[in-house]
Image 1 (cartoon, rainbow, N blue to C red):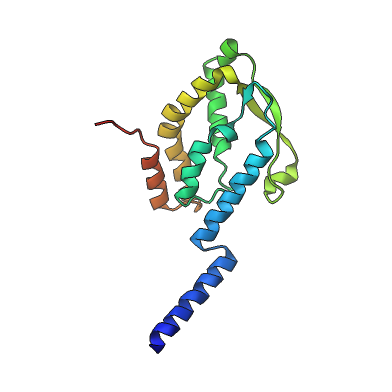
Image 2 (cartoon, rainbow, N blue to C red):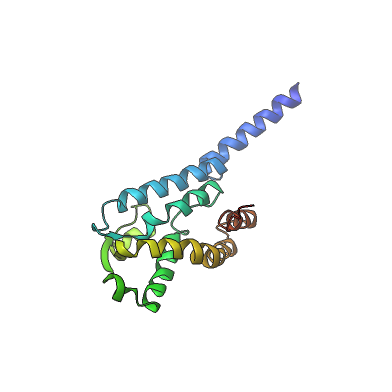
Length: 178
């Protein structure tokens, strides 16, 4: 009986230490949700009417990432990767001619991000008439071709573990109907 009590005390102590240090998996996930919610709060009204921005459009990718254990934080900001890749696609396919000009809007990071110190930045937003094209490109090109490289880069930097990378690649792989 004493062994079990000692073992339980050690486990509780370890859990409390991890929780306080932020190393507990549950604590990390809560922090990721905080980052996600704070970014949503800062971007929800910043994109002008008639346009769409990256962060709000990729929520369907961010939620499974957080649920899989990815630390969404100041080092893992997938909307930058998506935005840069989409901007290149936008230019290469001359989508401005078909949908009108993309414009800048003021984008701000939460105060606890190092990026916040640089102040409000301009980010691109795109005409809503291109939204269907973006969503198809995001699903068929970014998630299938570009996301695995992004996740591998984050894995190599120590921000994501290999099992999480593989799980997410499977999550965003195309599903087949039998």
